[in-house]
Length: 190
Image 1 (cartoon, one colour):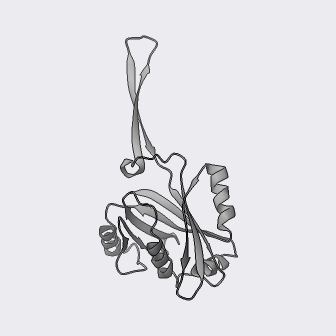
Image 2 (cartoon, one colour):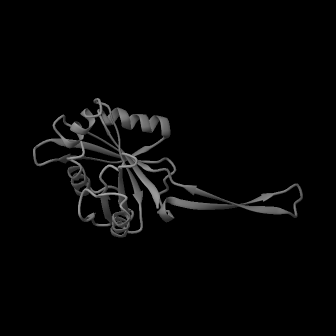
Image 3 (cartoon, one colour):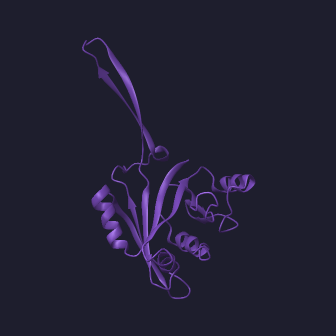
């Protein structure tokens, strides 16, 4: 399990995105708009961390092994360093009457972190485990799926107040349909 992404719901996605680009070196990966059945909209930007490589890494972490010579040419030591990819950032804002807009307004018009997403081997098994241990309730009875992507939200945790997402993905970024369905599943958690 690793932290996959942090999702923010904000008053101004463009200013927030620019902050992550300037302060942390993130890059825009994907942008899209979601239209809800009531006509309201949410605009979304997915950002990837600067150290993301073009090739798929094993779960977002990799090891580097290097040889460090000592004073003597005949001796060296192997060092192994493990690196973890920084999480992606997902930023959204919405019209005032949208799910996102109402969530931001309920937080003094500023918004904030909406959820933390953890990449897991199996969303269904993680749901079953968390239900069995009483860790969380989920916003949908079953995971939401798109090709190469499975996701689910918890309701806000009674212990931390945080919404957790469990995500199982291949090399795909975000799926617009899943994002819409996930947002709609949190409509009552304003």
